[in-house]
Image 1: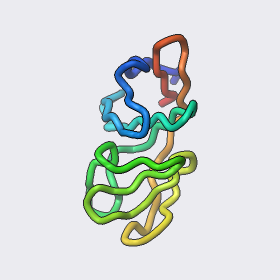
Image 2: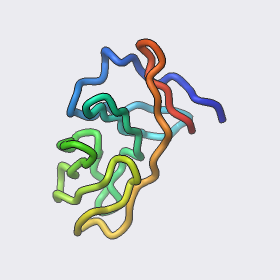
Image 3: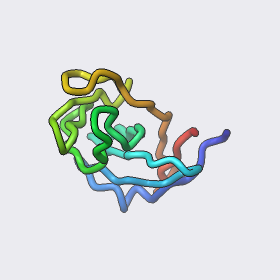
Length: 101
């Protein structure tokens, strides 16, 4: 599937997440510095929305139980999460945020 527009850059605050729905999937977007990240928005531990988590650099912390995930790889970085989350290629084109589903 080609890259699809999911939001505008103006709607994506730096350091905070934003949930978007694309192709029926809940995806969390994060802007950290000049880098855009897209990951599944559901924590594998208990289902928390990762888009509500705290973003620091290239990591997000689950808002419910403090599991941390690497935004670039989706890898779980600490317990209680025992597995990572899916990542999606993301890019900024003009003012549009696009992800590859």
